[in-house]
Image (spheres, rainbow, N blue to C red):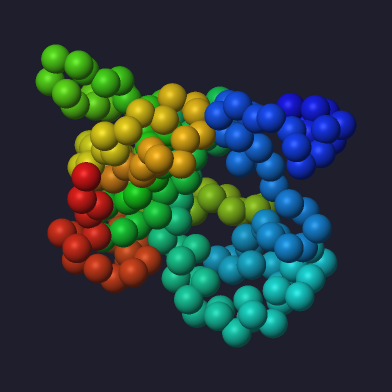
Length: 193
């Protein structure tokens, strides 16, 4: 697809699969930097930040809060490429939002009941960052599926489909769950499908 795009330019005919793949492309020219996280904040000395540095430093408290409320969805607690399924962020006490396409990897749809059935072994780990040991106190088991989009993503980009799901986390009795990003109560944070 990228070779075809380079050869044909802006008139390239694309399929939904092409568009899904293109969505994963990260821009590294500084217009949308993806800096490393260290000690709960962006590495402000990263040259990739370019003109974003002053804005990031000015919003440090908010960014630190949001980073603390964002975790990786893992299978069997591993961080290898086959076990990292996506990201999730706290939206209300005990609830995280993730992408529907992530949920589709974590669960199977039961047509008889019309519900998604969660596979075993999934956690959300809020301690993963560059060059830092993981903290087991910040890992929480995915206890269930609170809400799932009625749309099936099935690895295809279709902007008419809602690519969001809400998972319920279990307390781990080691540490409190991170504070939600927006500080909403449980019902206000849930998407209405």
